Amino acid sequence: MTRIILKNKPLVEAIFELRWEPQKQQADIYIDPNYKLLIGKIHDKVSSEYPFLEQLPTATMPDQIAGYIVQYRFRKGQDKWPLIQIGPGIITLNETDGYEWDDFRSRSSHVLDTIFGVYPDAENNLKINTLILRYIDSIDFDYGKNDIFSFLKEKMKMDVELYERLFENSGVTKLPLGFDLRFSFPSTKPKGAMHLRFVRGKRKDMDSLLWETQVQSVGDDAPKVRDEIVTWIDEAHNLTDDWFFKIIDGELQRRFE
Image (tube, rainbow, N blue to C red; front, side, top):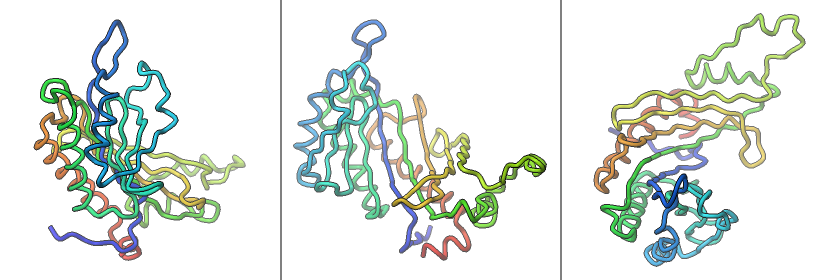
């Protein structure tokens, strides 16, 4: 498959996320007893590439309510990207403007090597339960002057229509103050779900159309072994890439090239 390079790509952020199950400590209390040890061990492993350790305000949360909330970031430098995030039961890789797929894939593989390498008795204790590959893209859009539904239909092949008579003699204008469209579909390769979202938002203080393309595998659908997770990343990327280019095919692709 020929890879298309976009010089003006609309990417806001690319995220690879891995989650694992906490352990039951007592009735209705689940924590990751190995988490506190991971922070220093991961820092030792990644400091040559991500030397800047950033503690987030969430780091002060009690362990009992901090599950799956990131608390520390390992960055290339202060406010620099890409970065790795860690919290109880969760590790992520995040990239923004510097995203290139081959580099992101290599860094995702490094994240896997790191977490499987430092987690105590990972083969038995690191029980993967969720994998996510998520892309957030953005296009500047003036909602006060333009019809977002026409834009979605004409530029992105998304035909969403509201019943016209809703607006007749109602005193309500058709230009929405906000909207949030979400769709989820079952996926077979990789096994899981494909999520698509269009939402009004802002980027750099400009009104924007944000859209997210996400592949998620949960529970038994999520592979547990490092090499199988790498295969999952490749398959998830192939799927998100295919949908992205089908959505922007035409005028938008020419704008981004």
